[in-house]
Length: 230
Image (cartoon, helix red, strand yellow):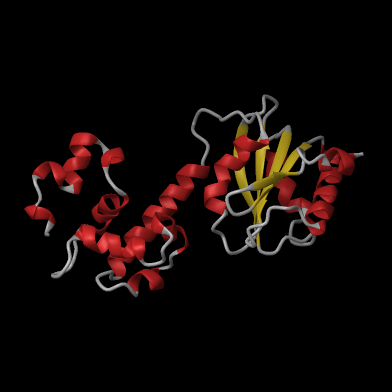
């Protein structure tokens, strides 16, 4: 059935305006992004094809490339680009602090900011959260992309922005593409080196959080920070 054949209140755009986007199904939300279907399929049917192609539901979009999307009949360059752009907007919104600075009270708060974004990354990404004396986030910096090593994550890159922004504390976050968030020996050695550098600069390394597939490990909660810092 073509979307125009539906009652106005059941068409995705009109339904959004009347009931709000939260009332839409995943297929209807994606149909709005697609804008149109094909001669054989409505935008909703085409959206269902996109979502069901891998069996993972809507989460498949987080890992999709333009080429993979374009392999679906009815998805051209423009539609694929719109989907990729929408996914990227969602990622950036989820990891960007609001104008009113966000206070950090626990490792769970921090992990919650990154777990949905970083769990899908195929490369290790190392980030630093810079905090003011009140424990509020000043900024989030991407320090490195690639396999975590003490040479790749150099203290100069890690602490340069922290010094410029007069950060009082810093929290490190990185992911394990394997899905297992257990800190490796290299993670621990790198953290040890960064804690020592932080002490020299007067910047407290508060925690190092490792993100896996839907789960995380906090070195502080595991007691590793005390062992390293002693």
